[in-house]
Amino acid sequence: MSRRRFLQLIAGLLAGSTVTPLPAASVKRIVVVGAGIAGLTAAQTLHQQGHSVTVVEARDRLGGRLWTSNRWQQMPVDLGASWIHGAKDNPLSALADQIKATRLTTRYDNTLTYNSQGKPLSDAETRELERWQQRIDTALESAQSANQDQSVQAAVHKALGWDSLTVREHQLAQFIFNSTLEQEYAGGIHELSAYWYDAAAAFRGDDTLFSKGYQVITEHLASGLDVKLQHTVQKLEWSNPQVSIQTDRGELQADHAIITLPLGVLKTGQVAFSPPLPARKQTAIDTLGMGTLNKCYLRFPTAFWPDDQDWLEYIPTEPGAWTEWVSLQRVAGWSVLLGFNAAERGKRIEQWSDAQIVADAMQTLRTLFGNAIPDPLDYQITRWNADPFARGAYSFNSIGSTPDMRDHLAERLGNTVFFAGEATERKHFSSVHGAYLSGLRAAQQILDLNKG
Ligand SMILES: Cc1cc2nc3c(=O)[nH]c(=O)nc-3n(C[C@H](O)[C@H](O)[C@H](O)COP(=O)(O)OP(=O)(O)OC[C@H]3O[C@@H](n4cnc5c(N)ncnc54)[C@H](O)[C@@H]3O)c2cc1C
Image 1 (cartoon, rainbow, N blue to C red):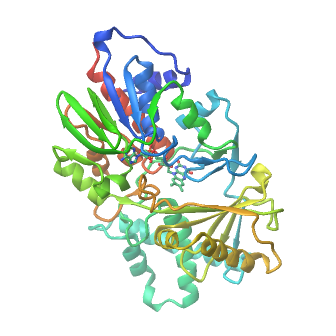
Image 2 (cartoon, rainbow, N blue to C red):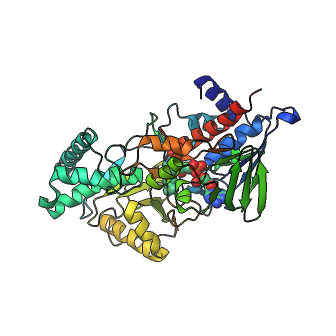
Image 3 (cartoon, helix red, strand yellow):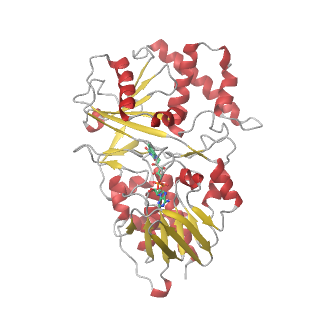
């Protein structure tokens, strides 16, 4: 898409939902599968250009992996994405400005790291951790110029002489693997490609979150759209010039369809394509990774942790167990802690009951802040991997995958079926802004096709 055209489309979305009428013969029937941000962005863009758009969504709500919970009065918390990552020049910041959405900035320099005994790191311990971080960074840099791809784990284990390290050294290194790699990319280090794990581009600037939650964006993008909730797509029959979309509540016919199914859902094959998907798209689906990141919000009567910090980190004895916490006290004034579990550990604890997860989290918090701290007043827990309409949190570049595979995933099927969604973005996969850009791209493809 040309930069000029792209800016025009964004300007359209920013201006609100004014619909440009088209002559009846030029109006196309378009079905968008999925009411996440990719689907809503594509649908709103095409709707504004005068096309007849229907969005079909399996869930009983909008947003997909954007999901603001309003269970706690005056404390809307995001169970899916929270942040605009890199707010400067990020297209989502422009959208948020337009709807005057208040944002809060969490800062990584407001981070306190605790050792395995629950004490804040001493200066000597901080320097030791920095040395390990440097060794790991060097190992990963050299893995990126090696002759062959390997997993991040294979690369760092070899470079660090893993088998000769002490238990404590293992804990330090595993903390770095989890806090800087697995929590960010959602894949385990044994799955992440050493060549491509960090291939996504980033916007500059702070990470900001919405004081009323990401719902403000999804609601804005959905305004005026025909969205059919609780319609699960089961099969797509595509052959030029028509596409038939079969749902559990009937069939829709369209000139074009835009598929925004999460990579995790595409991997299960629960939506059938007839004719089958081309081989290289199927290979991309099979090879790219779908990661796990789960959240556990705990609400307390008052903050018992350092309330000037945004991030609390912990070097656990069990790899990946509650290494990262966000405090909402400083930014929002809420006595709420958000604990994360990513990759293998994130997947594993989905099998536990809520009570087990909360007890496990509280054990860590008692290690950090003492046995006298109160139990939470309430909690909210996610299980993104088990979610049938997500099957994971977001995509990552797994060993064996290449950036080209993202393009293959994005490739259209003739003039009929188009693809969007975070995983289809070569440069901005795994993010909300990537999904948003992919929605604009798919809408533009349809507009280009129907020009004149
Ligand atoms: C816990 C977590 C934290 C995250 N944190 C951040 C963050 O802070 N910042 C950031 O930039 N990104 C973050 N992300 C990633 C971000 O949320 C996603 O990249 C983005 O929301 C994906 O949007 P999408 O439109 O591509 O997919 P989705 O939002 O998943 O939309 C796809 C839609 O398709 C629907 N669907 C699935 N199957 C069917 C079917 N058979 N029929 C009909 N509909 C179907 C789904 O219900 C869904 O609504 C996070 C994700 C998670 C899970």
